[in-house]
Image 1 (tube, helix red, strand yellow):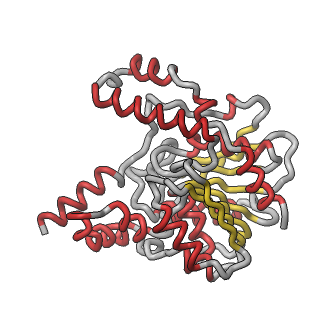
Image 2 (tube, rainbow, N blue to C red; image 1 turned 120 degrees about the vertical axis):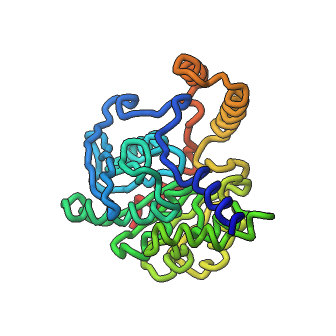
Amino acid sequence: MIFASFVKNKYRKLLIRRYDGNPAVFYFDASDFPGLDKEPFSFTSRGGNVLKGYFYTYPEHNGKLVIFDHGLGGGHRSYLREIEFLCRRGYRVFSYDHTGCMESQGKDIGGLSQSVSDLNDCINALSAAGKVTGKLCVMGHSWGAYAALNIPALQQEVCKIVAISGFVSVRSILDQQLKGFFSLYKKDVFSMEKTANPDFCELDAVKSLSGSNARALIIHSDDDPMVDYELNFKRLEEELKGSSQIGFITVQGKKHNPNYSSDAVKLLGDFSAAFAEASHKGILNDADSQKQFKDSFDWRAMTEQDEELWARIFDFLDHD
């Protein structure tokens, strides 16, 4: 019992907390892309938190809406390069910060399945406000891809899903993260997750996609250190291989960012190593040091997108 409490407290401290961004990291804004419009739209989650988001468009757009669901660790502005790519193609993109992230309310993220709960509330709010016209597409990365993969179980009107580096279920990510001694307490941690989100925690993408008419494009790198390729992508590929509605793309050597260019993946790795070293040395403890560190990196180069992969994504999104 003592060890179970220790593991749950450690898990909560490391993962189930607020994510307000890192002052040593640069976050793009619409103003960094000339002509990109940004319109605010907020909604209230079932937990009573106001979640803040924005519609992004260029003046010439096709009217088709894509909801972009962000990953864990920051907010939607961590994905402005991806959002701008979609807008440049002609899409309207709505993206928001999840509960406990960046501009949104919440003392913490609530639990891993909070992303599915928030996405469900998001779609309901957009529909109620008359913001959804025509077919609805959802795209997400990592934590957001997990939400995108499972939202068809809740929202039958979602017609297309693009999931990048997503995990299948809360159970699958706990299987990956809680190993050795900690594996003895997976049931305790899962129980904590289920208490936080009882209506969503049991969702599994295999079942969510099998029971849906939605089409999905699932993308993963074979060396992803964050979301295990075998436990997640390969499981989906094996169990859903008979479905003509689901496509799979394996990318090689791109770690957790298969939509980035190879050069960007390398630069991101260099940044991560430098950040870890600077943090270890304690030289990022004041605003001036954080700014100097942040300004020493080329953030456009470090987030450069893989245009060949995006061509395949657009081929999927553009055609009915």
